[in-house]
Image (cartoon, rainbow, N blue to C red):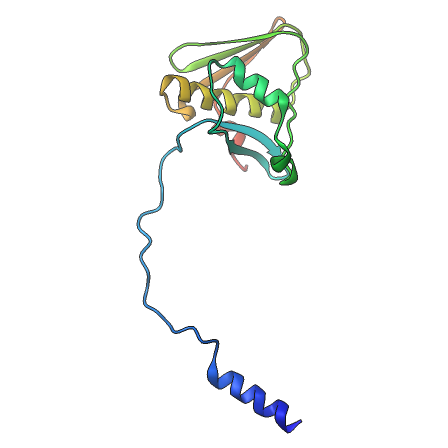
Length: 159
């Protein structure tokens, strides 16, 4: 028992071996919007953007195809999934700060799936045209109905 008490006292006196240092400056935090392609997938806490730097983006239809394919295996292990479902053909078109997604058939609109499309298409438009993704408006046309225009920040708020 005496040895155990002695060891405890020695441990306290010697500390952890790390000597204190002064404040270390890390520089300024990053600001603004990150560059590069991002797809938005669904997580338990809402939409989460995932970088896709290794993808060659030719047009906005490629964004929809990537969303339909869903997150890769590593992304799925972190809890990401896709709610995007397109029945039939689709086509995207873009102007200065607007994107239109036309779906051939009426489909049930899910808020999170709409957010995935809006945020991913806005980011894709920014990559292709050099605009700011938070300024891009996305309209989704299904059959005879039109929804939007939406902007990505509408889907990222925590209200």
